[in-house]
Image (tube, rainbow, N blue to C red):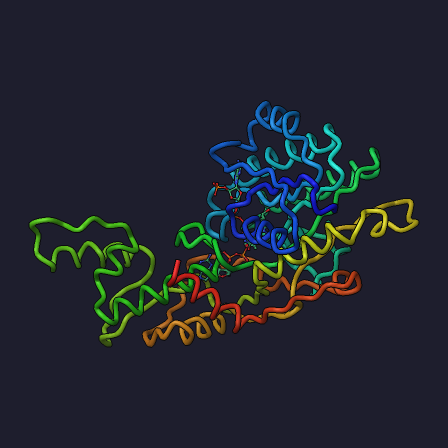
Length: 361
Ligand SMILES: NC(=O)C1=CN([C@@H]2O[C@H](COP(=O)(O)OP(=O)(O)OC[C@H]3O[C@@H](n4cnc5c(N)ncnc54)[C@H](OP(=O)(O)O)[C@@H]3O)[C@@H](O)[C@H]2O)C=CC1
Ligand SMILES: C[C@H]1O[C@H](OP(=O)(O)OP(=O)(O)OC[C@H]2O[C@@H](n3cnc4c(=O)[nH]c(N)nc43)[C@H](O)[C@@H]2O)[C@@H](O)[C@@H](O)C1=O
């Protein structure tokens, strides 16, 4: 990638897109074409055609997608499949049509079977059933990686698909209904701590609740408690505070710091071509690349790690009525390692940086 090349980072204000943009800037790239969701809805085919015709980017990082945690994926199944197919079809096809030199498509490790052998290698794709909670999203991601592979084979394009593990970092989504587990637990633990400390004003502002004029403090506290209860943060009979963790706490997850993820994306754009991944094989499958650490932790251990970092001394309770999702999804990152990239930030350090970012944002 030439330093003055015109680069389109789709989704540049999101968790990964913002980290990719920063990483590119740090590495000396400066010629960006950027659009917010409001400026360009990537689901709008006509608008995307016009955008590519006008701007003619040379390189594309496709980090825009309809993204959410386990409950959002499970509830809004139509949105997750439809919007993601729309976004990726529009961006990948128009990249081909206007001669984009290279594109990086961001998938997810959800593409692998729910009961895949662990750790998951790239070639366990499509070997058995997907995990139900995010099946529509995973199917869209599989379509995206197959679209890259198929355009490469038929039209000799250079599109690479990467499959990141669960990510976290600056600009993450802290919405307690839609977010992934790590930002959700940081916010729940922090709110729980504020409640234990009687810091009502902080919680009121956090939920954007207007101060109630003419009503005494008690009424306002009731409103605040109602809001907290909705998200599983409650006063406990032992005088402490309970924060609710979804599921049993036993699922295992792997977490990668978003700035490491961005570094891997830029590294791959700079150093890896589809032809290197394909080699001499005639039947091409599984050329996508896992991006992960190869290390896992249970949700329960994660909850205690976050509580310790935040200084939350209340109770952690598990709500088994909420879904666990897949019990284990650990990547095998050996392909990525053999290409020359390895993660730097370990989970404990990442959680500390994430909490710092959250309280200072
Ligand atoms: N976060 C994670 O743990 C993981 C993420 N991934 C993948 O990584 C990629 C980036 O995810 P992440 O950064 O977490 O997601 P975010 O939700 O943080 O960011 C997604 C970005 O896409 C934009 N976007 C969404 N829909 C549209 C649209 N119709 N038109 C234009 N822009 C749109 C969003 O804009 P706006 O906010 O304005 O809607 C936002 O800037 C995605 O492909 C995701 O599937 C894969 C594995 C794990
Ligand atoms: C990366 C990948 O992420 C998604 O899959 P997921 O790994 O199941 O996502 P998650 O982060 O939402 O949950 C991880 C685990 O954590 C538990 N959990 C506890 N308490 C909370 C909680 O408060 N919020 C959330 N979200 N989860 C919680 C939760 O029950 C589950 O066992 C895909 O949908 C898809 O988006 C995708 O690409």
